[in-house]
Image 1 (cartoon, rainbow, N blue to C red):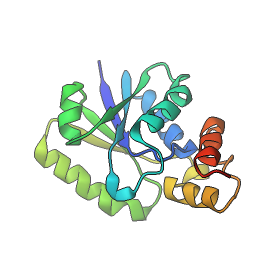
Image 2: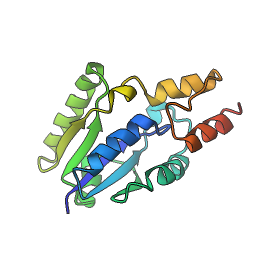
Image 3: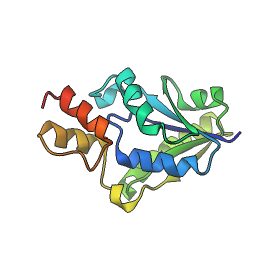
Image 4: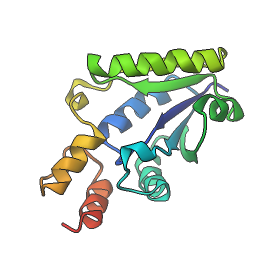
Amino acid sequence: MRTAIYPGSFDPLTNGHLDVLERASKLFDRVIVAIASNESKHPLFTMEERLALMKPAIAPIKNARADIFEGLLVEYAAKQKARAIVRGLRAVSDFEFEFQMALMNRKLDETIETIFMMPKETYTFISSRIVKEIARLGGDVSPFVPPHVGVALRKKLAL
């Protein structure tokens, strides 16, 4: 079974994330959306809340499941018997960081490949950070996130 890990903080999950997941699900037998702890990003949602938001969004993708992980991504991938890590690239500005991470992951475990995927052009400008900022300022995030995520954002920010 060809398994891939699609890691990220997903704080919050966006339509761009879902687009990359849908594309990856066509290439792999199983895709695990791995919600990572990244306190340096000052998450709005807890990992458990992000997992709860992820599950209904990915339910239509039959070969995808969501999980939480902490620690080294390559160690998590090895435990899941994954041979690939899927990373989304929106713009050239994402590439340098993602390239460095891919090379480091390869150094840590050369059996796990990194696959870069681009979302539809419609989603290239969307980021979780921008979505949170729009929501904080009372803007409409409905074009950028699944409906239940928009509701959760409004609740969390008490808008």
